[in-house]
Length: 216
View 1 (spheres, rainbow, N blue to C red):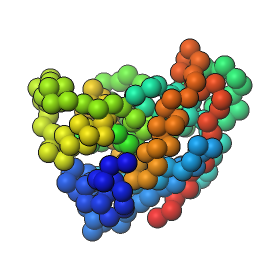
View 2 (cartoon, rainbow, N blue to C red; view 1 turned 90 degrees about the horizontal axis):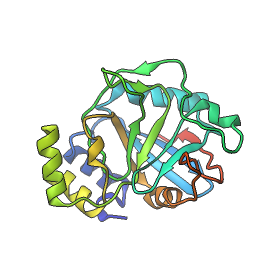
View 3 (cartoon, helix red, strand yellow; view 1 turned 135 degrees about the horizontal axis):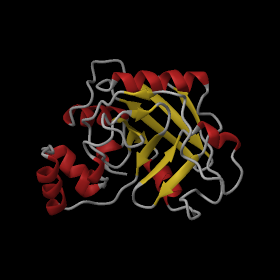
């Protein structure tokens, strides 16, 4: 794990540098437990609609027992489909939701460990009410980042470039999906899940269930 993220304090400072959090604001953290280990995420106060919705669902126990139903090597691990709780082996998942969408709050980049909202294609880039993914990604180089800056008309900070180049991420999704948090502990766990055996629909052959609770 990079020294940039080896403690909560450093994660908070890095998030401030990335322009997605303030250490003076209340920090909301959640613990995602799996059979492969625990993942601690910090939610961004700069995306209040997504933050509050996630907290609400977690406190209701909505995610408990759901699967990481879509896992793609060097890309992301995705979960939050309510139909996955009782889905049999081989069932195609990804269409379930709580019956509403969330207005986009796009801005933060898809660095490794980014917690982002999944969505179906729509003009407003509105997010799924419950499905989310965590970026595993791959290392990026200067020319790739230069390309995305030009094509997407964005400007990465030095801190963002450093993480993309030294830890990885998936900048192709920047400005397309809402990133509403980041992993501050447990990057090794998402790496373990990332390389599991999958079927033809990218569902892990062995179910990966989650349980989520707020810890701050």
